[in-house]
Length: 132
Image 1: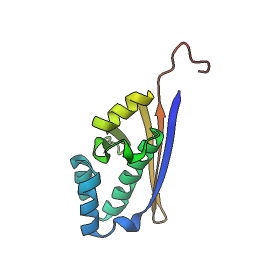
Image 2: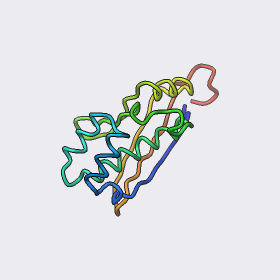
Image 3: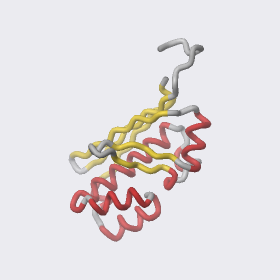
Image 4: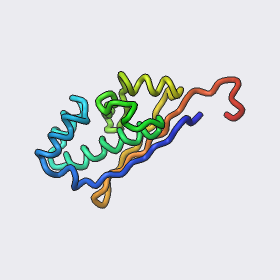
């Protein structure tokens, strides 16, 4: 059952200045995210924007925003095929447990100078749930 949805948009141009991007990523991104962005070369700004949007989408799906969840507790990783997924720890994991979110579906896109992310938070159905 869906327990929450969230989406976010970011202009990629906000992430184009190397110094500003480095300051923002140190504050908002886990080490694996920072390494992924550095490895993207010219695509670093769009990757940073996409990861930031993914974090925003998750906290919106959890119904809290960053007031209850540290951005460093939400890590956006990628499968070997490039699909993004979340690894939660600390405040993010606690918030997910509190609202009953067990799985997250994440989609990230970039086009026309904008990055976007969409997150669906889901919990397992129980026998008491009225709809499949």
